[in-house]
Amino acid sequence: MESSEIKSGTLVTLQDLHPSSPFFQDGASFRVTGKLEEYSVETAIAVIADGDANLKIDTKNLRDLSFRIGSIYQFIGELHIQADNENEAILQARVGRNVDGIDLNLYYQTLQLLRQFQAECIKKQELDAVQAMNEDIAG
Image 1 (tube, rainbow, N blue to C red):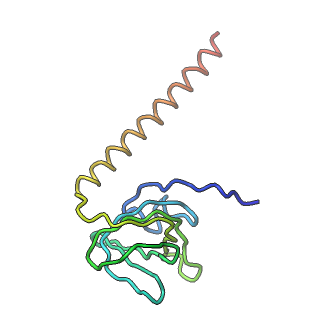
Image 2: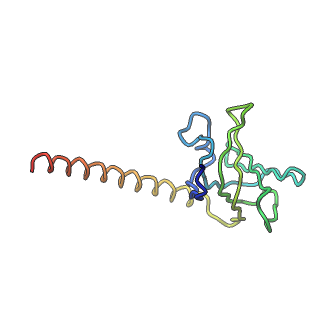
């Protein structure tokens, strides 16, 4: 039976979501930010971009969110890789918000610092585990 647990959205940049990236996995939950380039009312498909990277967003589950081309939006949802084209994906958004006014440079600097901190924490946990094993062996 499939878990009904809602996963948190891993913070990623649009540049992180390319086919050779470890993030590019079907069903993975992400939080993405980008400028709205296109929006179709008929299909509820939006396209956000950041630099030369872009991503399609399925917004049909979102309510009370108005879309303006050129505005900055943030979405949380699950990535679905297209069956007919494994190089293309769409994010099924469950949360969306307009974040006009965000300083994207500062946001991405903060994301880099967060990733460094998380990597250091993982490294420390691994070292602590090895040290505890060595103490158990020696003790």
